[in-house]
Every structure is written in C-alpha cells, then in structure tokens.
Amino acid sequence: MFNDQCPIFKDQLPSRRPRSSFVAMKIGIVCYPTYGGSGVIATELGLGLARKGHEVHFITYRRPVRLAHFHENVFYHEVDNEDYPLFEYPPYDTALASTIVDVVQYHNLDLLHVHYAIPHAAVAYMAKKILISQGRYVPVVTTLHGTDITLVGNNRAFAPVVEFSINKSDGVTAVSQSLKNDTQRLFHIERDIRVVYNFIDFERFRKVDKDHFKKIIAPDGERILAHTSNFRKVKRVEDVVQIFNKVRQQVPSKLLMIGDGPERQNTERLCRELGICDDVRFLGKQDAIEELLAICDLFLIPSESESFGLAALEAMACEVPVISSNSGGLPEVNIHGVTGYLSDVGNTEEMAAYAIQLLQDEAQLQQFRKNALAQAQRFDLHNILPDYEAYYEEVLERSAIKVE
Image (cartoon, one colour):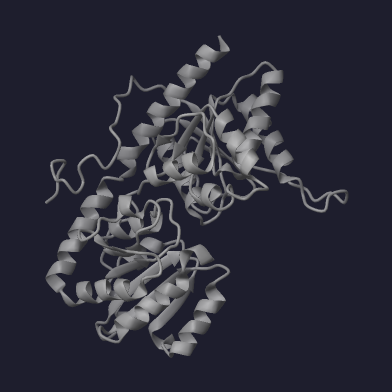
C-alpha cells in the first residue's frame, strides 16, 4: 500500500492551507458547456461547492453537459446571443459580458470564476470594469486549462489579449505545474499563478461490476483497451489505433474509442486499412463514461499535448492502468512503472510493448490497478475542493483591501 511516506507520491500535491470557519459564498462560474475538460471540471467544481452550501451560478450559452438535473444551490443563466443581421457573426463576447453584469448585480455575487482564458478572462475584465463604473467591485479568478494557453493563446491574434486578461485577473490558477510553467514561458506574467490540480468525483468514477456488459464487448475473454478524447489532432488518435494494432497481434483484444471530433473519420479509415474494424468500436460521445471504464484493462492516451490528463485520471479512478505520452502534465498524474507507463510522443512501438508486457502479466496488471486507484485518490474532489475555497477567500480578502 502507498502512503504519504512513499517517495513515488510524496509531495506530489501542493500543501493545503487550513481554512477558517465556513462562510457561504455566492460564486459565478463562466465556462464552456461542452464535453471538454475545462467544462467538465468547471461543472463538477460548481456542484461540489453547492453541496457544501455555497450558492453557484453557471453562466454560459448552453446548459453544461454534466448539469442535467436539479441541484440545490445551483442556478443556470443562459447567454442570449441573438443573430442580428448587422453582424456576420453573433457578438457572443458582448452578450456574455452583459449577462455577467446582470447576474452579478441581481444575485449579488461575491466572486467570478472563469474557466479557459479565451474569451472568458477578457470578457470578465470587461464586465468587471462595467460593474466598477456602477460602484460594484467583483473579483475574478481565472483558471487556465491547457489549450487556451498552449494552442489558442499562443496564436498571435489572441496572445496580447490572453496575457492582458491573465495579468488583470484578481487570481489565477493552473491545473498542473506543467501548465503553469508553459504560461510563464509563453507570456510575460506579472501575477502569481497558483497550481490547483484537476480532480475526480469518486461518487461517480469507481470500479463497479459490469461483467455482463464486458461479455458483450469481449465474449471470448479478450482484453479491453480504451481511449477517450475530443478526437482533435493534438490527441493523436491514429496513434491509439496503431498501438492497438500491435497489441492485438500478440494479445487478443478489443478497443473502445469513446468521443467524437474532426479526426474520427481519418481514424475509422485507418482501422479499415489495417483490417481491424471487427475489434474496434467507435462509441461516440458518452455520458456514462465510468460504466465503460469499469470493464477496461488498459487506457491509452498518447497525446501530443495534455495540460493535465483528466481522461487518464478518470480511468485510474476506475482502476485502469494508463499507457501515455510524457507530454505536459501527464507525468504528474501517471507514474511511470507504477500506475502505467510513459513514452515519448509518437513512440507507438514502445507504448505497444509496454501494453503487451502489462496485459500478459496478470499479477503486475493487478498491482498496477491498485496503484492507479491509490494515485487517483490523491486527486479526490474532497481533497481539492478546500484548495479552491481557501483561494477564493484569499482573493476576496485581497480585493476587500483594494476596494478600501
């Protein structure tokens, strides 16, 4: 068993500051409502805060995918972005800023937490300036999630706005040390960036008995491998297929491809060219990902860039070891030789060799399953949530001094 004295896990998560007595806050959360990691984390964070007694207001253009039911202390405000004939494209930024101002005013919010720099941090700055002109100051916390910095934010067309918006935020967090380093390398950042890791909700993501489902996918006891993503180029989904093709030649296996996106068509074509379509299932977007992970033996995530690796963490919480690239924040989640294996981006030969080794050694596979769960438990929502609460309080205290 692993504990805080184990050198593998020791000091991996930042130290947690003690909190003062509980004070409920009114928090506005601005995010994308899609299946992407930033929207998922923003929604799960808001729900966790609401369960602890805080009042949470989601502000976005569509109800977030993980906000499907009624929740106490949770409110949803849809941004009305009408398509006016004057504009070639609907002015979403302006509509979002106006909605933020309205919600802050009429629900008396204490703080705004915006997820993803583009356009939310910039829009929040505009909304804050409007509110200041009306005698109201609301502090803004910006969370950087990854591609908003490494891909979108690094674009010359957006970089000045991203840099300005980060520096004008009242607080800034990054979901991994790797992303913090990338942000400081790519931009001139004057403000401190606090690392607050992504998290997992173990009430949802845990291994459950789905053997009946497993027999449908793998009727002859084949090993089941899985990949989950938005199928963008940066996820290198064709590498997933190449790895699997090498594995299946030595270990009878099935592959579940969960998600959808621009590279799906090319990936399906590759499966046909390799003649492995009978062993690969493209399942599209799935809400109950945890039920699929529960039947898996190995998770593949060979991404070119991964600020944290939330999909890997979800798999590990379901006791599934991970074969991944060593890019970005993945080494902060997947521990080489303990919870899975890491390889250089594009090294599908080595990734496949690691997968074969693990799948052919049942004792090692079972140990890695236990290790994956132990590592994932360090990122339990109940461990990370107090860090956000403490940071909110810190930002509110600083803002109170600023206003005075």
